[in-house]
Image 1 (cartoon, one colour):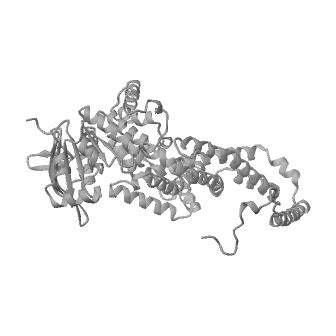
Image 2 (cartoon, each protein chain N blue to C red):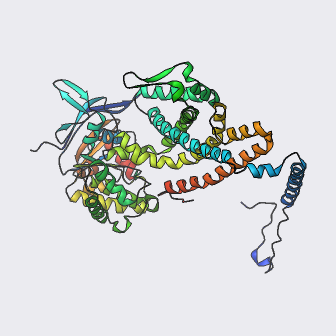
Length: 255
Length: 285
């Protein structure tokens, strides 16, 4: 079997006395779609932010695409990487935020080419061509010159997904991508994510959309109090959970 | 629940034509009358006072005054530029994760905000008393009195002092940008400095510009302090003239009018800049 694209080993992280992650281990294969569910404060967003190095680990290790994240290992010692190295490592992962975080002073197209042109030093004309294709792919071909403030939440989030894709990442992280959206706009964003999943993109999705998880995810992980309580095929975890805590959570969410 | 004091009137009982009578605005008429009367009194006092308006007119455009005006504008622009460069630099240092840089920025603001500008100007101008010669050993060396001209002392004094204030304005702007913007910039592989330059500062400019415009207008008038170290800006030159001809008030009025003119001309530039950095803002006003 191939080595997993992402390996997470006994990752721990505390904020003061609060244990956000209390020893999490997880493997994600290339092309897999993994959904993480759980109540707020269960550590799922922190795990995502650790993978993208927006949060530093207290202990444990994360390996992405065969590369240890955040540290250089010499025998048994781990030396923290410099800022530039960490920025380079982040290129393997794209991130989609709950609150979109588009750059408000740039048009949709400029948002997409900012990374490719400024960070990857790609040719600007080429980057613009690809950006237009990506905007078309998320159903926004007419919106290249719109500013984020002139777009709906659903459109902004689709631009944000296209912005992440423009960097050609190996892994996409979604942090509750539909939680800040009006209910009628959730569907258009989930549709884009589903299309991405079917195209073979490796995705880790923190979400409350259980239907999306059931339909699209290869695997579902339920987290509680900084630990993985239950993991398995989406249908199994969501329809016939083994753990009492999973059952309680699902009962609360489904009402 | 309906208010008890206002009985409900069914629309059917209202007559078809109702005319709204214009409000009287008594306060406005009263205020206008009082202010006009006061202005007339002040105008009459000045017209009868010991002011030779012919002198004001005659000295308004003499070469000494015009060159003073030019020097005032040049010094304002240069000192403000130096202030903004230092302000951005120290604001970024202050926000750095490096505690040494943070401490240095804090010390800079403390020192230059904590002492009067006029004292700083005098210190720079008299630097030769501390260091008779300055330079880099082996590279160049000069007598401090030759280097620290009124121009150089005014530029350093005003610019470095301004930097301390501007750094706080810039810091306020950087803090005002949503933390999610830093994260989004990091997520597309930007380093801290690149994200500051490309993502954070352009957004911070919206918050920074109005107070900077304010400070620039302050700076135009602050340059008059440089007259105490012999920098020949407009007030200094006006003083030199009235030392000779004793037309004190007339020349002060000349200088005052020029300050008003300079400020009036430069103010619209702020609006232009603000419009430029309002790019993408939801309410373009």
